[in-house]
Picture: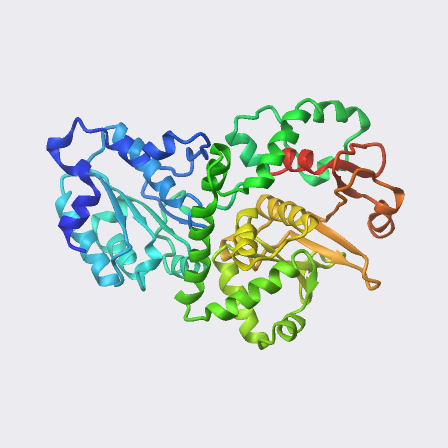
Length: 454
């Protein structure tokens, strides 16, 4: 890529185009969407901050960068703004050269705002960023870098100590939780709770929870139909075919694996296994035996999908230490309903509705309450599951609170028995039942997901 190509990506540099609405060109598609994720407030533009934006492909990282650029253009910034998509660059030296040329081009600017999209396409990219931050005026500029590989961004980010400004850091975009989805749909006035807050609720609190009951039921049906990728929500809202999305995300799954030099055929075997074992306990050895793929190879494929935010593994949590156990059986989930639909449609599989709902519950809680998500979806802490020596299972432990999904019309005393015996207090997530009278609180799944989270 030469500098004339860079100028092509930044048409607002041309003094003759002052009256052109480039902000609209950047975010026109976003602004015309019926469903909009809120991209305000992610960046502090006031200092020399450096942000690294990560998350799965097609989640909105590029939109976040362009949304921020559009706001800068509206405020009068022009040549001080650089947008650099790196699809055609592979070497750090080339990236460094382009940044230095841009620095020379903007030598009269007091401050620059530099947005680099898909920086993980460039091998050793942190060398170029480190050099210009350390040795040029760009040490005083704003940087926002995006990428899809958690492991690459994490390792490279760690090689930039002390170079992220006062409030810079990592930003993680994941599929929308139900609470975030409702916020985008302007469903406001919902309580905001932690699971431990729900344990303190009394029957009188039910009135507050039921105020928006009908709209929550309607929107939950829409949410579990579309998933949490904004493009999928938009397509569902418009009644559009999902085929283009299905094809795009299937290509992403295949592309991620092949980028690491792995086999498409083995990926299909492993995704078939994941779909049939969705929400069930498994061990690496049992998975390898069933798929006839050796254990290390199976783990390698799952690791790639987890670090690219496409698969999530949930670990057993020790009841006393509250720490995840590496040796005990795990559970596996897709990162979003859309991804499970992509796999099931492409491979001709039929997923159980109970597994789909548990998948939605688990990812919502993992994204809202889990820690260590910056490393991908394989090192989550503070959210796990539990099972006893007798095999009795608790679907989720969130901040030490046991949560079980019982998505059925009637909740019986037997449904409460595992929590009552092993934990005394906890939460049952039902289909319709709302009962806050005992030590084990019973809430509809859609109400729980609407009131919990960030």
